[in-house]
Length: 115
Length: 114
Picture 1: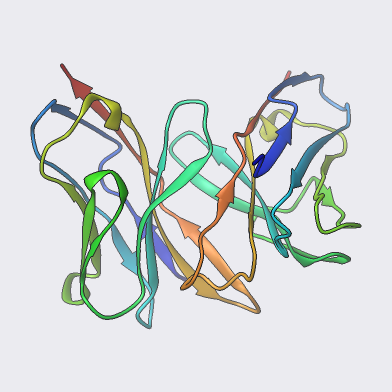
Picture 2: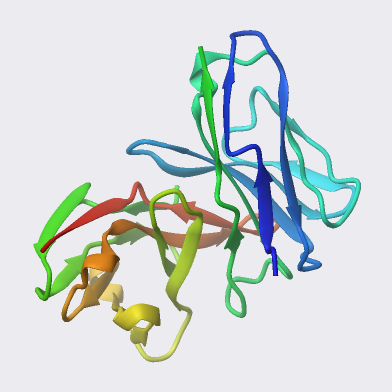
C-alpha cells in the first residue's frame, strides 16, 4: 500500500540547473497537487491537476511546470533553478477533490536546496 | 482574501498537560476546516475536519477541535499530551475557485517536555 510516492527525498541543485520532482500515486486518485513548504510560511499551492491531461496554476506557479499524462503520475519540473526555490516540496492527492467526504494524502516530501 | 492564521509559531508543554492550538480563519461563508499534523520527515496527516453540524469534532489520536463561528476560530485541543504528539500542526480551510483548494496556516510547532 504505497500511497503517494515522491522521489528524490533530497537534492542539491546549482543555480540555473533543471530537474524534475517525481510524484506517483497508486490509489486511482483524480486530483493531484504540488505544494511547497517554507519555514514560517505554511504550504503554498504551486500547481494542481483534476485529471489526466488537465492542469492549472496555484498560488505560486512561477518557475515551475507540470504535466499529467497519466492518472498515476504528476511530475513537477523546475527550469533554471533559483535560490528562491529552495524549499520542501510535497505532492498530494485525493479522489474527488470534494473536501467533505475525503482527505488529502501526502507524500513524504522532497527537500531541495539551490546553491 | 481567504486566510488562515495560527498565532503561535512554537508551543511547549509538559507531557500529560493539556494542549490548545489556536486557529482563526477569514472567509465569507462557513468554510470547511481541517487540522493536519506533520511528524518530522513525513507528509501531512489529517487529524480531523469540520463541515457542518456539531461544532465539536473528534479526531484521531485523542484530538478534538471546536468551531466557533462568532470568533472565526477552530482551535485544536487535547486533554493530555503524549511525547509522541511532538510535531508541527497545520490548520487549513478550503475555498472554491473552479475546484476546491486548501489554504494552510503557517503551522504551530509543538514541543513536549518529558
